[in-house]
Every structure is written in structure tokens, then in C-alpha cells.
Length: 345
Image 1 (cartoon, rainbow, N blue to C red):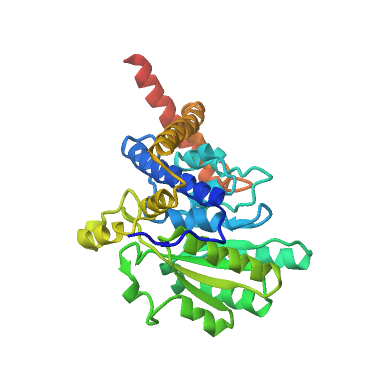
Image 2: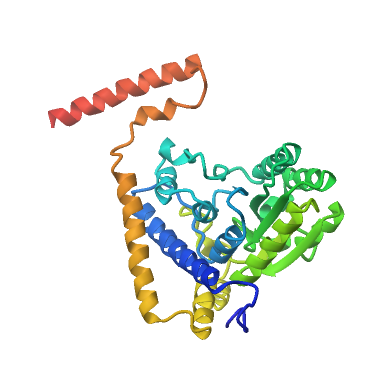
């Protein structure tokens, strides 16, 4: 069913089209990445299919100077805000080059520990306020992170000092296998904002226009010095938590199918068709661009050649401890033996 019945007057046609283009690109990138993992070309990967509107529309509501503070699943938001696609592929390929953020790109690294990025976002916003910079931090997190102490500390700190930060919860209904009903006793996550004295908003995360409006308005409030906003976007990840997960163990297939009726990419495409901003010819052109874009990024990643396994020991400590020095020497000896056996064959 369409999420936005009437054509929005406050969102330009060009922006609606760009949101759709980026969402469609992210959908195919995600599906391609899952196939790459299954083929052994990248490592364990966290799919995001179903959450495209949350990541794309929210980030396109930012200004270039604003910051994206992501979780491990928010590489879509990173790419929309300027992170090269090949860097994301390199990251999931286990390459240190993937963690290198271009100097003019205002994103933080992917955060794997749950909720640890939220105090970082608050600190980033505090620095901007102290230094008189008009910058807003957009911090992503999931429903499971709302049970972590870092979430509450970041919310309280940001509220007390009226920091320019937007806390964006992608409530995809599960923290790995833990359903929302076992995560919180409150009816919503957005209502937790009241305890800190900040604005709380709950939106349909499959509706790209609703996502864009919520973040746009929160950024305006933050920029005016009115403090943080907590946004809860209702959404759903269609696939597994990661490619090492089996979601059929903890949720029925019918549940995922019911959420697909509100598919964010298809919903926006239908809206654009109804607004007469899109047609089959434009869709075909878009799909060709998507294919070329992903192929180019993949080629850049794979042009780096094989990973040197000794890089396992790099960038862990400033000075490698003695026990890791020994482990590195043993590993090097083992690699030499394997190479010798390979040459003999």
C-alpha cells in the first residue's frame, strides 16, 4: 500500500527521485553483498534489506557538515553521506583500507559493539557546540541498544547540555533473536524521550517521506540550539541478523511476508509512478546505473589482490606484546611450511 497518498508539497521532486535512486542502489548492493559472502568473496555480513528508507531518507536530510554515526548495519547511510562504496566492500572483506574515511566525509567508523557509538555522537555534538560549529550528529542504533547503559547516558548528557544530536532508532523488532516485547516494558521507544526532557517522535520507517521530514525537523531544532531528538522508526529487516544467523529459528516466515507488504523501495517507486515522476524507461536506466556502480566498486576492491595474513597482527597495539610476537613468529613459520608444500606439489 502507498505510504504517502498525496504528493508532498514540502519535498522537492528531485529529492524524492534521489531518495528512490539511493534506496534502489542500496537494495541491490545489499543483495549483491549477501551473494558475495556466500561465495566467499567477503566475510560475515549484516544485511539491511527492509531498512533502506531509514538509512537513505534520514541521511539526505542532513547537511554536508553534519555527521553520521553508524552501527555495523548502517553502511547505507555512510555511502549516502559520501563514504565510497568500495570502502564498505573492503571493510567486509577484512581489509584495513575499508576503515579509512576520506577527510571531507563526515562519518564515523562502523560500530560493532552495541550502543557504544551513542556517547561518541553526544561527544561529537558537544565539541561542535563548544567550538561554535553548526554541525549536527545523526546517531543510528537499534531497539536492542535501548537496553544498554550507553544509550541512557548519551541521552541524558545530550539533554542536559542541549546538544545538537539526533538519536535515530531503527526499531526492526528484534535484537538478533530477542523480540521487542522482551526488550522494553514501554509501549514505544520514543516515549523514553520524556524521561530526559527531549522531543520523542515515532514514525513509519518504511515511509521515506516521513523519515525525511522527521530528521529534517530534528536537525533544524538541533541547529537552533533546542537540543536532541529521539526518533523511533518502525521497520523490519527481511533477512538474517548476519549471514551467520538463521532467523527461522526465532520468527515466523509469515511475519516477514506481512512486512514486505510495506516494502520501502517498492512503496516509494509506486508513489513516484503515481506522481508521474517515474516510468519504466527511467527504471531501466536506473538499474543499468546500479549494476555499473556496484561492478566498479567491486572491481576496485578486488584489484587490491590477496590479503597478507600477517596483517592480523597490525594496528592492534602500538608495540606488539611478547606473546603476540611469539604468535606472529609461529604463524609465519606455519605459512612458510604451507608455501613449501604448495611449491612441492
